[in-house]
Image (cartoon, rainbow, N blue to C red):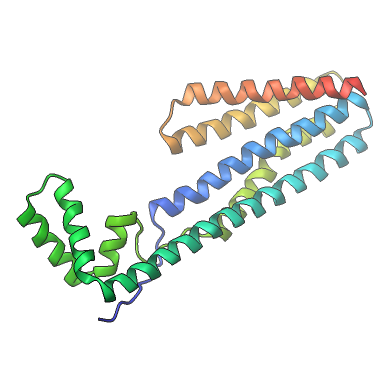
Length: 230
């Protein structure tokens, strides 16, 4: 029996969500880390150039760090999925009956009768044996692997964008409005990230937004205190 791996060009929902997830995490991390450095430095010095360089350096470091982390994490998952595919290809050649029984057991566990489960399993194993066992046993869709590069770039750009508003507010707004605008920028960025993440996870949007804003404000308070100490 010759088993062929079919490659699809379109993205599955899981692949799209993984890219969006990486972006949301990158954005949130970009906001908090950049704000932490900006506030600490701004509390210790009023030199705008020093504040800008510190914030920019942290923004770049955070963005690249998040991207590398996502690439390594998703690459590991992709390698694991490929290993599973190779394992199932081997089992289909050496223990086809066992694979058939696994598919039958899956449909039987869904409430179908043994006879009907067997008929469905036999039909699927004749048409798409590898795709069937991967879906049934591991919930993997044949030909689709999570893309580490997509996750890395999503996290990279999101982290940079997440930190850019606080950076601009802190370095380009002068006088009395500097701190209020920085706090507002943090709140707006945190709220947007929470909105996106809650929609992706089908969670409570209001709770997510309030939680993210509170975390951002706490981050400002802690780092402001650290900056004042020195």
